[in-house]
Amino acid sequence: MATTPRSKAKDPGRVITVNRRAYHDYDILETVEAGLVLTGTEIKSVRAGQVNIRHAFARAEGGEIWLYGAHIALYPQGNVHNHEPTRTRKLLLRKEQIGELAGSVAQKGLTLIPLRVYIKNHVAKVELGLARGRKLYDKRRAIIDQDQEREAGQVMRQASRE
Image (cartoon, rainbow, N blue to C red; front, side, top):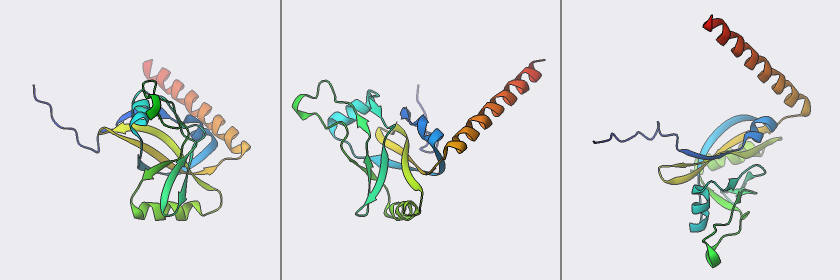
C-alpha cells in the first residue's frame, strides 16, 4: 500500500514536552519555531522524552539565540560521551528572525520563553514565545476567565444534548 507524503505545513511533529506554566505566567505575544543544536546523547534523551523546559529561557548574544536552563537528562547508555544536562544550547533561526527577536526583547518587560519541544521531520525543534510577564492580579483574572469559558462550554454541550 503506497502512502502519500505529508506536506510540511500539516505535520505538527511529535510533541516531547510542553511548558504549560509559561501560559500561566506570561502573555504570549508571538511564537516562532527554532531548530535545536544537540549532541548525540542529547537527541537520544529528547526522543525518550526526558526534557524539562519549565525554568528555561532564551537570550540573544552575539547575533545568535541561546537556550538557557533547559534540562535534558543524561542518556543511560551514554557513558563517557554523555552531555551536561543544563548546558546552554544554540537555537537555529534566520538572521532576520534573530534581529527581530533581539529588538523585541530589548523592549522593557519582554522575554523569550520555550513553549514546546518537539520532533518534526526527524529534527528537534523548540517553539519560542515572545512573552510579557503577568502580574499576580492578571494571573487571577486569567484563571477566572478560563473557569467562565469552561462553564459556558459545559452549558452549551448540555443544551445541545437535550
